[in-house]
Length: 451
Image (cartoon, rainbow, N blue to C red; front, side):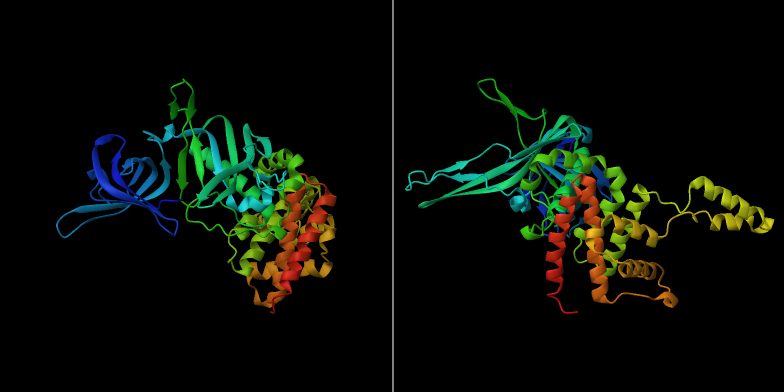
């Protein structure tokens, strides 16, 4: 964002006359803080008190609502002047809200600069029809639209212009328009944005973050002289969502798929992504945990991915050695012949005995995705590495070397991505083509490093 500090007056919604001066700061580490020359009320004079909302006016005239405010410090200076500090979760610039439940929006516009290559079209056309004049046309129409969960998601562009001496530049930024069928709480939108952001991150195989978020609500409207009215944009800045996170570039060659290749399927892909959140949540969590933490230790990446794969098999495949009724009878027959004092103990020990082993789960998955090139030795190494890293039993230390563990982790990532591409609804042939291309690229990159 352009400004990193807003100086002005601040007050509690219930005490509009009790204003004090201070500065709202957006720090480089992602923290948002409010530093006040005084205390809002005696009630909040002590540390670690929470305040639902704080309202403010900057000296430039901006109307600001601070959401989720936690007092971090209060102190007296040498001359007895009290100062207080707050950590701020969210900032809404452009409106005052008196209560948290009043913070509702019906539409959002979100920029994703990192999706420039994923969208794949510039939004700018050049027409050299007369061979002497170049005409640059800004396109305002959306390049793709999809309906998901009573929400219309459209992909388009925002433009910025720069006029200099003898030159004009036009820069486009991909943005997503999100229109709800009804106005929703901010938390509902942030949950949707989280899963939408993950969809984009999965597509490009790279962490992506929203940059600018504008919300629109019927509560904040402007009526023009001709009687027409429109909702004013309210800028939303949320700690850890679109502030304090890196926006490094995406490797176009490393994307799983681009918008152009799935434009006709976009709606069905997004519907599958959202409809399967509950089913695939552990897989999503483990996969994106590694994607958004590139500096995670290799062992942690391995364990996260193999846990996600195991969880997927448990949820989607038949995960029993024998039919449940058959196993139940077998247990009953065994328990009958055991002395009474050992019955409860043995029953507890055998409670999960019908579960498939990790090895058998892996074997079934690698058969399903045979094009990834797993063999029996790879499955055995995966099992051994997981067991050692989970239990650290020195007597069973069959542990892969660093380069082997790196390769196994890369293969687990490919297996996870193949699973998610399939769950999105892409045909097997398309999934196979995508993963062969990606694995060839990653293998080439791997061989550049000398272990």
